[in-house]
Amino acid sequence: MNAILALEDGTWYRGVAAGAPGEARGEVVFNTSMTGYQEVLTDPSYAGQIVTMTAPQIGNYGVAPGDAESEGPRVAGFVMREASPLASNYRADGTLRDYLVRHNIVAIADIDTRALTRVLRSAGVMRGVIATGQVDPDELVAKARAIPQMEGSDLVREVTCDRPFEWREKAPAAGEEAHHEFGISPMKRAGRRLRVAAYDFGIKYNILRRLDAYGCDVHVFPAGAPAKDLQAIEPDGIFLSNGPGDPAALPYAIDNVRQLAQGGTPMFGICLGHQILGLAVGGQTFKLKFGHRGANHPVKELASGKVEITSQNHGFAVDPGSLPSDVQVTHLNLYDGTVEGFRHLSKPMFSVQYHPEASPGPHDADYLFKQFLESMEKR
Image 1 (cartoon, rainbow, N blue to C red):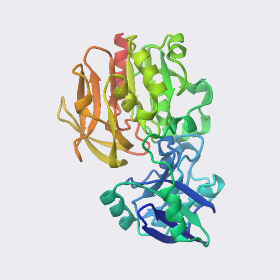
Image 2 (cartoon, rainbow, N blue to C red):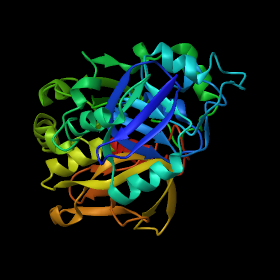
Image 3 (cartoon, rainbow, N blue to C red):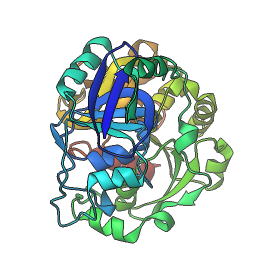
């Protein structure tokens, strides 16, 4: 079946359908990871986005139960150069195409993803539409222009949990075992089980797995839960998760984090959680031209000069000039100099823009979970 991807600037690409039939709308972005497409598909931070994979062949190792980062795919649509029809992997329980069809994800293949990526890098990410069958490209361009902008969009409410839960109750045993085959041992384990209250702005499973591996019992709360609900369990630490959309469009989350920050409980944020913490302490955020998405982004830790290769997925960043004097920037992106981490100088709070839990990606930054653990134990 034919398929077309159309962008709001009038550019369009003809390919073949590689997933479910129908139409998908969203912000078209690109990811430079060589592997990890199932983790990308199921990362809630991609809600509202059509993801283009720059690796030339996708799907060659199929899909496996233990590789999902949420209950199912969260992307709006998927773009590939070549979709492998075969799944060569002893862990796989099916092909990528079957997985996309089963979860009703519209995808397109056989287009020049290198050319598409150059367009998105030059002009910036754009709204777009994928449609299968006999469709008019000009009509799709008009539909793309009618899609709401990512700026000002609260997509967190679409991906957060409905009610509080404890991770150990929710974790799928079979999937956990399969995933830990490829995990790494924690650098340290807590002397006793520590209680962590985590805001679910679109939390990835591997963040929960890493916290559990370090000796934390994680109590997960919906994004809109009042600060007092988290305080009621008397947590040893508070975690702010990754998630989709514009952080400035989440005043309820910013207010709750601001209240929690006054209590002195150790706090750790990742990705959207990092941006929300930045806003809560008085900073501002802005939208990047084409964002950072992939598993190969170099980040410099300023204190040591060490460079970490990191996994990233975000389209917004914290403005360093807006941060108050009691907040210190700790990490910088070596591609464009944007803020990748900061720490409060008088309160036990820190955050990073990238993903230390990896999945997919390198484990260079796993030490940040150890820092969070030590912060809780010190308190």
